Image (cartoon, rainbow, N blue to C red; front, side):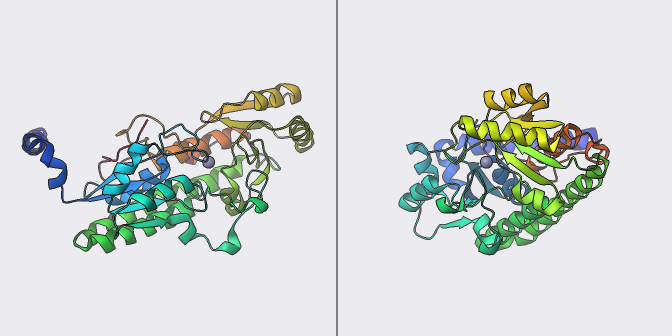
Length: 332
Ligand SMILES: [Zn+2]
């Protein structure tokens, strides 16, 4: 075994040396599709489907606010070379879509995955995404069922552009679908361990509206206003009242949006403030198995179930293995 894998590794090194030796021409000789994506969870799902047969390059750096993100001029170069541009849509990445429209090749499609997957009648509007602004809550991918639908759209787009690899993309989709479905089943099982009446979320960033609807959780509030600035004193007072009235054990913040206000709500109410949810910031480092949509959502669901007084036994038992190597580019 050892000898075989050494042989394979050696061959891979020789191949990559051969590619390097052609110098600056190597990129243009790469016949694989170049796919531009935006936020890291979508980049990861795309990479799970593409494996090593298409190049995936993310645009929004991990750990930045995707809702206010403005692409730098360098992103235009990627967009001008891309064969396919995958965005969430639902008005999340309008500046990037504008830049893409102005720079892309004529026959390159901009595919708004969320807009394809979600019928307008299912749009959720709420405190952070009020209807009068015309921007629905865009966070479909935190729900395992929608993540599977995202993967299906990506499979279809890749297969249309690259039909020779359609069977490969289809089998990668099946593997992703199994993993995401298993994650969904684990959350559904583990949430039963949460004491009755506790499946209530107060988060800083409003990322769980569709998940909560699907899994029977209640989003009792979010802190971040539509401007993505700090909430007003009256909003904070209202949140404090809600936390007290709903008797929730933990309120949740995230690393992407550190919140003094939420810490203060926790202090005033005596409720635990858990600040380690990860919004678009995948755990570990690029290339690690847990640096993936699956790793991200496993971590977030474990943290939420534990925080609400449950025991995430099924989630803990999920081991994350990659079916294909993840060679996507994740800007940091
Ligand atoms: Zn978000």
